Image (cartoon, rainbow, N blue to C red):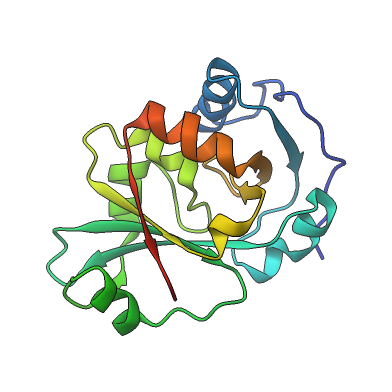
Length: 180
C-alpha cells in the first residue's frame, strides 16, 4: 500500500529533492501550467500507482521507454495503464524494426530519468530531440494526465491540453497518435 500525502498545487521545498525534480516544477511555473502534486512512497510499477491515481482523480497512464533493435531510434510511449503492450502492433504502426525496452543508460542519457520514473516530463531534457513521443489515442480522450516529475516519489495531475500545447511547444517535440 502506498502512503501518500494530500495533493497540493505548489512546488515543494528543494530540501531533500533532486535537481531534476525541482527543474520540472520550475518549468511548469515558467510555462504557467497549473498542477496538483502529491508525494508518496516509490512507485516502481503501474500497479503501485493505483492509490495515487485515486487520490489525484486521474486514470493511470503507462509510460514506456522503447527503442528499435539497432538502438538507433528511441520512443516514449504513453498508453492507458490497463492496456497490454504488444510490440509487433506498435512496430507496424510506426514502420519500425521490432521494438524493445530501452536500457537504463539510454533513459539517463536522453531523458535524465531512471527506471520506474519514465515520464513525459523527461522530454524537457531531450534537447537534441532524440526521443519520439507516441501517444495512444485513448490517452488523448482524457482531460487530465498523470505523470511523475522525473522521479517516482511524487506524482502530478496536469491538464492534458496544457501538456500538449504549452509543454510540448516548449520542448519542441511533436507526437504521433497510435492505437494499441
